[in-house]
Length: 155
Image (cartoon, rainbow, N blue to C red; front, side, top):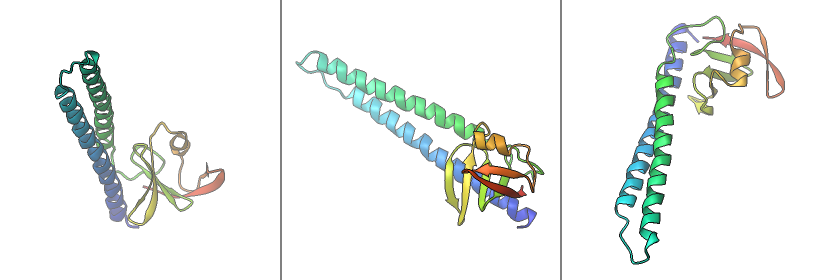
């Protein structure tokens, strides 16, 4: 892969993550609005507490979705701040590290994905595996899934 292709691939990974988190943000916003509507539309009934219980449940759901929204917005901000135009000599935030046929992208913990026909593991810098990769260089050995793997490339 050329340096330009590596930069394009890292940008593609970042954009994939931004798109995923943006969908989570929209889903949380929609769910919040629906929970608020449900709470607002809860009709007063002759059953007494049923009305208040329904409204309270609607507000609890809205609060839960608000927390999900806040978390997704925080993740989105963190991912947008990840530098992907730099090329690295060692594992760092924003680096793609290839080892054992897998590309590890140190950015945000989004798990194992298949992007552009390649297996990519999105790692939070705080993840134990990411901590193992940070500071390593091409040719260094890592332990992944209880198997030794040699770092083939870092960019």
